[in-house]
Structures are given as C-alpha cells and as structure tokens.
Image 1 (cartoon, rainbow, N blue to C red):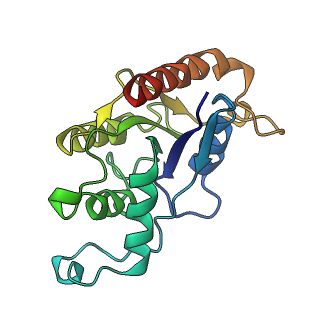
Image 2 (image 1 turned 90 degrees about the vertical axis):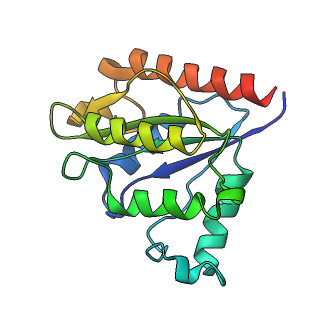
Length: 182
C-alpha cells in the first residue's frame, strides 16, 4: 500500500495548546501507511496582496507543504465563536493566487477541542463554510470535543471515553482520503 501524506494544521499559536495535544493523539489513530506532518502557521505574515509579488519564504514553505499533502486534518480551538486569526491567515495564504489554491480538491477533516461544552463547534462551522468555498472536499459529520483531562492519556492516546467515536471519525477521514487518492 502506498504512503499517504496528511498535513495536520493546528489552528493555534499557543505553545501549550490543548489542540496540538489533541492533534497528536488523533494522529495515533491513523493507519501506519499515513505519514503525518504539522505545517507551521504562526510565522506567516498577515496576508496582504502587497506581498504576493515576492511571497515570504514562510508562505512558500507552508503552501508547498499543503500542496504536497494528500489530505489535511484541521484541529482548531474556538476564538470568540469563530476560528482563530492565525488559522484564517494560513488558509488565506494557501488560497492565493486563486489559480494556485492549495485547498482545491483536497480532502479535509475538521475537528477541535475547547474546555467549553460546545468544544469549538462554531469555529468548525465557519471553517466548513470557508473550506467548501475554496473547493476542498470536506468530510461530513461533526467532531467537536470538550477538553477534559481524560480526553488524552498520559501516554498521549485518546482516552477510552472518546476513543470509539474519534476512531470512527478518523476511519471516515482515511476512507475519504483513500477514495479520492484512488
């Protein structure tokens, strides 16, 4: 079976991000033929058409990493009932110029966690709208998770209470990715 490259984009620039911990635990649910990378987004300058002529090296690196991925898993917190600015900025850079949109036809799964009961549901809703408009093939279903200490074990795995649900979500992401890759 050929290797499949998945870029896991963590929509947080916080060094102790619970979403980064969650993303790493989710990666452990993927089959062994899935290679994972974590593209950096916190070093991207704010998107500006003024920078398009000579795109910064960080932008070129990010766009290449997303373009090279067979699929993308976005794991995001929720900021003020929407997605974080750092994530939106990365998405904007990847979508420009329009004829080089790295998101088009890319399988994308969206999840996130927060301490609140709705677990980033509204951020995910906004993100689904954005990614669909950019032409991504967004995995249906929802995976908004309230962060509790037992969500991730000391070994870095998804805890027993959420494991079956999240394994099923990741299995659907694997299925979508493999189906679209052919």
